[in-house]
Image (cartoon, rainbow, N blue to C red; front, side, top):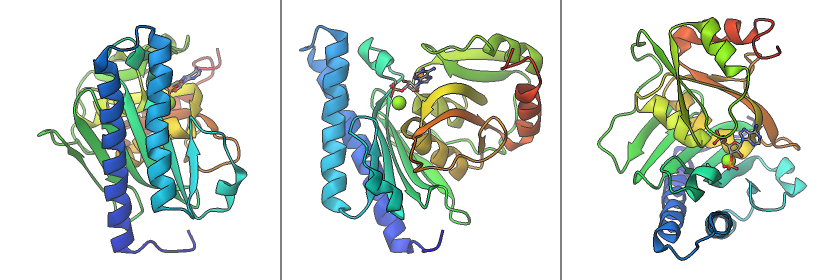
Length: 275
Ligand SMILES: Nc1ncnc2c1ncn2[C@@H]1O[C@H](COP(=O)(O)O)[C@@H](OP(=O)(O)O)[C@H]1O
Ligand SMILES: [Mg+2]
């Protein structure tokens, strides 16, 4: 990172991420509550567009020189030249939103030269927003709209690990992985942001996914997990680099640093995810 973000700018960016994630989330929760759309797919599309329009309008107005990468808007290579790029998922966990479940989220993150910096994950059905700053040396995170305290990555390990995995894109290798890791039970739910929130709220310990993720799925959840000292990496152990020309990044591991080596050794063992 060649340039430095001032403390004042960091505060403003964080407040902006929290506010816009919360307000976009309130909009899509409200849309669903109206009961106006009886076709769940149409309702999901309407919510996607409503949240995206809101986020894009706010972002373009406030930060006209920053890059934007959103799941719901045609991509532009202009963002590749930007020091600051916002990466947003207006509705993560679309399938769950459509089926009246609580496990969906709005993600708003900001990256600096591809490094995750600021993030907010709104959980509209729960009325809360998790937030974080993951810049090295300036890490901090928390939750608004809830009395809960977020768990740090060095919090004690339970004897049996609870691993969150996708409800609707459950990979075939997951049972092999869980058996090889031992003492692990599966918790299936939607949305990357919602899954990361399970770890930070003490309801799960580990998240491993291999295929189909995009930068907007992982960026804001990664920021918050890193901000609280959780280990976040790809399946080969390397760090995600954001604002790439191809937003498909596929993989994500989030776990406590204390078990990172064991998780990586198990997931990389021949025949586990490549079998
Ligand atoms: N195998 C796969 N193929 C396509 N998309 C996938 C995928 N695995 C995860 N995703 C995407 O990652 C997000 C979280 O998935 P899941 O809820 O299954 O964990 C979803 O984003 P959206 O809901 O924003 O489309 C989903 O589309
Ligand atoms: Mg998504």
